[in-house]
Length: 485
Image (tube, rainbow, N blue to C red; front, side, top):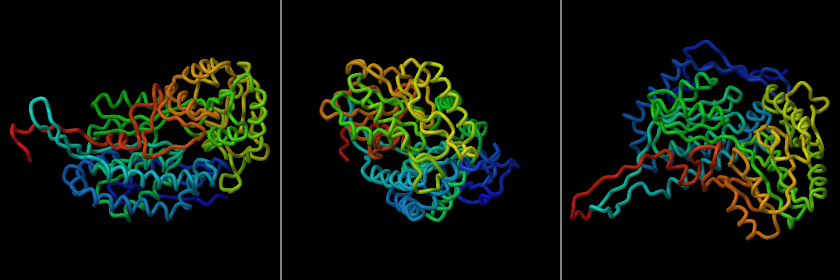
């Protein structure tokens, strides 16, 4: 039996508080199918309490009025505590969403710590006030905190995404209501403990696990000044619709169907070694995953054989086993979604090169074999729709013009990569692909640069000074003629 973890209270305004509703969230292990956690389900009345606390803390409390150095000291303690507790955090997340433990350590926990650290560096180097020459005289331009932030995070990389929203918001002087996914609420309690111990003032942070109905109530709350949401495109559209009622500012980080473009001169071994982890990362449950691999027809068979061999060799199993490279999907519904797309791909005429089913001996969990489709046409649903699982497509192309056209022929534009012996030529390809982040002969995400998407992949940016600016308002102050302060 899986050990049951129970939390009976909600983290509101910095304190554990009895919930006003009676509903609970049961956290199910994607590996065993057993319930291993239980937390309160926040009610709309709990949202009201959290927003009111955040509103008071912003309008009247010390946090926005502290110096940047004072806020940085608190945020640095949060970052340091995550580093100390990273193994504990990684284990909890792997139990929640099936992320392989080795990947959880690096990306879910230490990756989150790096987000906090990068935000600190950005905040320290940011210009908050400057004098400009205007058309009619001197101008003082200020950047001030936007106010109360509703941060809605998904289950696939919960701490990483929470850090992407919380770190800049807190450093800017905002107060935050964090809404974790019902699939991954337990790690959020660890973050609440860390924030409390770090010395966040009363009201600055609340954490409310809940479903979509309560999320909608939060993002539509008139006491919220800014919404930062990460999730699916349909949910993002709904967030924007609800936010429009109050003209609430929004940042949306949504889905992807990114293309890895392999040029004819690419080295086979290094390309396969780089693309495979970028495609199957986090069990394929990553918005930036390279799920379309574009291969030149002149070398298609050679590369298809190598990718098939690499995918077939991926180790599937218990996410807490350090040897596991691909764990279960987050839930049975996600498993069925992937199996449905595998069936659709076959009906469309694509060829399964490896995988395609449920691994033997792992039927109790939400497992799907690492699956690679060959001979995929970009008009097929498996090439156009975000599957969010370990299902990857190989698409042949003729020349570079066609490759760029296929890469751009998508409703999404979040990530991508190009693999070539000529880096300068790869940069030229990168300039032609309409996507928010791109990689040449590598795959990474640098938190000091802007991250976000074109088209349906989102609105706005996270990370870097561009992402930090999303939590600041810009104020122009006209100065009297002749003033030279």
